[in-house]
Amino acid sequence: MNAAELAETARQLVGAGKGLLAMDESNGTCNKRFAALGIGQTEEKRRAYRKLLITTPRLAESISGVILYDETIRQKTTDGTPFLAVLEKAGILPGIKVDIGAKAMAGHPGEKITEGLDGLRERLAAYAGMGARFAKWRAVINLGDDHPSRACIAANAQALARYAALCQEAGIVPIVEPEILMAGDHTLERCREVTEETLHAVFDHLYEQGVLLEGIILKPNMVLPGLGYSQQESLDGVAEATLTTLLRVVPAAVAGIAFLSGGQSADLATARLDAINRLARAPGSHLPWPLVFSFGRAIQQPALTVWQGDDSCVAAAQKLLIQRVRCDRAALTGEYEAAMEHT
Ligand code: 13P
Image (tube, rainbow, N blue to C red; front, side):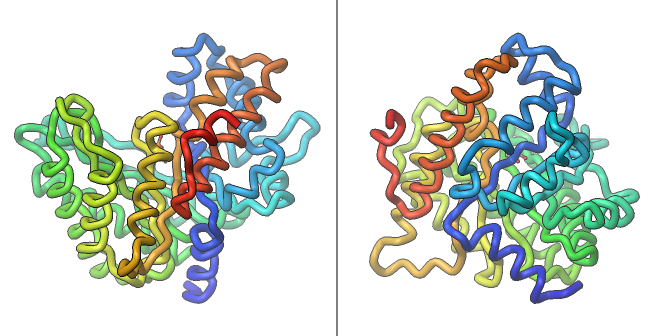
């Protein structure tokens, strides 16, 4: 592990006033999103869609890195140019999802444990050889009457830490993603408690595994009430809860924080990120890390809906994509305004 190189890669990803585009849906998840819009679920359609995303003109003005999936990192544009070469030319760093999914956790009904550690050292070496500079592993924590259990939080935190250590050994910056799901009717306070407990456990395990904090990116959820809870929170309320929680548990040495969107609508995710960054820049705040985005659905959904699998809609979809990431970039400095949605 070269500590200076890891820290430099992390800085390039989160310290440049840009964010990340998560486009690492597994084939199953990508097919589900295609099916919902009547798009064919073939490798060729997935390739055409991912090509649309990465060839969007001026994407690199707002996006520092994209997270790819195993199928995608090997794909090429129609003229035979590898996707990786397209990204390199644009100055966008390629990353790779390396977990193999959240599976039912034995003995813990309703809870999940993310798998993928077996053989990970070899897979990381292969991805590093292809040019991947960073990786992602997502742990999923469900809120319910009886969960999360300590066992679920601990097992997921340990897996995240072992993954992160293996990434750094391979010279790859790990994105550490413990996601508290929005599904459920829990209050904002409950999400705050569980987010805090989970992040505590994650940083304990990262410490135990000897992970270099300057060479990781944390990808957390925002602190939000459950989707089914009757009272949704104001932007300022979300910003306060999210920032307070992060300040309590995330060490200052961490390179940066890149939020997931978790199923929020695109404009709401942007508005909340903007509120968080406004609060972070208020007089008297001294935030140790950049707060950026690593959105999947909240960046892609408007473009995917317009594309519909139709070649003649590529330009219109790319226009929406670029507008979306420009709004997200503005949210990094608290300069997003709803009017920007219509420009
Ligand atoms: P969403 O922003 O759609 O939650 O996706 C981000 C991601 O990478 C999930 O692992």
